[in-house]
Length: 202
Image (cartoon, rainbow, N blue to C red; front, side, top):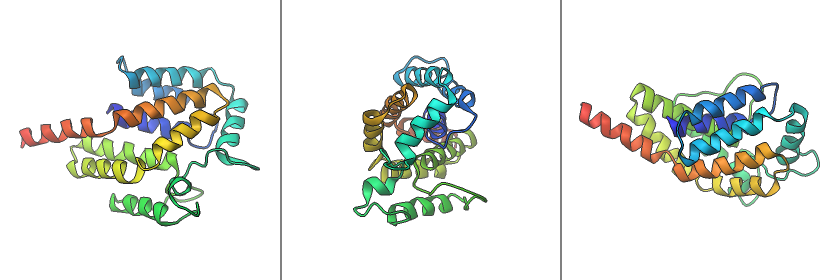
């Protein structure tokens, strides 16, 4: 579950800020656990940066990076990185929405992000991984591998690099490095181990 929990924690970091920095830090620590590999080390460092952040400063930095109002330094949408016109709800966003529908997820009620927002896509990876690893759903693991490969890897490394370049707050600099490590880790190892176990248990 390391990959999945890290994806969930990063989804919260890249989501619109609220009064929940402590909760975001706790998710990062939970994802790290007691392990000492690179992803765990990055997750703990990110948790420390979040825990020591002042809420308004974090929110201002988030706005400068991802919202504007005058210039958005790093648009958090796959479409911006992958489509030539960088429009919203084009083929890339529609592909993400179709993947969610195929997994049985419908649009949420109330205000929501576009389907190709980085936080939404990372949260979806967590959901698929949870279904696969905790509930033994091999189809969910196959969906996770495909979504990660086809929907996220074409743009996520460039997004992480852009966040690292433009971050003006230690929490977002740490988030960029953590995301890079998550990309290197990938879901395939955990998924492969789970599917191997399912074959032996059948």
